[in-house]
Length: 326
Image: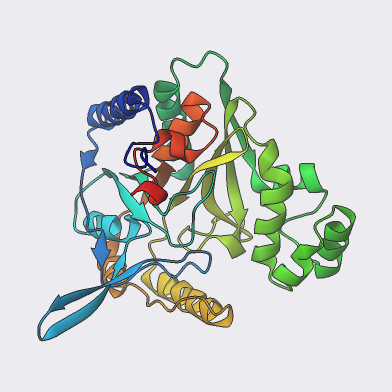
């Protein structure tokens, strides 16, 4: 107990974090991408059925108002884009309830950026450039890998992620010691994909390399645009290094009616799963109605990035004060 006041990371790690933040800012400054700040407290929060959030009360008698700690700065940043900010980035805190473990702390640091006029392939090119800068000292890191979700899912499971057969998925689960998925996932295609991907596909991705997986099935992407050539997939990309998910990005959906419909669907799913109640962000919907420019965006967890850069075993090794010492 006498040492509980101490940070869990070393002074060298503090210095490395500072250098990484400096390198990121130089990277985006050279590309004329504007650094912005958005509120941590908001009147609404995301509707993603996979996420839980923190709430607090704003008390200014006689006013009392419930507020949410943001799980991501995405919605507020898109409001800035709709207002004419141009390409932007942010380094800031995000909060997700119920997340703690080797790779999770309920408070964490995100890098999020949006490039106006970028397609998803252009965003992937920029991600590769950023990773090259940040991992410049890692001689063991191979060139960036790119693969479609369908290709890599079929490679490691033999299943087609775009064609859902509950019978086939249940048979796969029984044969591969994943029988618990049958009760957890039921007839939900998206849940099946998440479960199987995390257990049987993700551990194989990005062995000493940055691996980008793109073209996620349409049932999994609430904020990404449906691919214009193949409506079974969306223009979404995730980054993995040594089996660890590092970031998630989209060719952003700009259709306000479609986005509102997806929010409504997610709220129903949250109710069915008895998840904490949330409401859709009307400010974001209004911003989309006013006109969001064509853009692509990416979010990267900087704490996990530091873990991968230093081969750290747990997130506590790269944080000053994780939740148990906060």
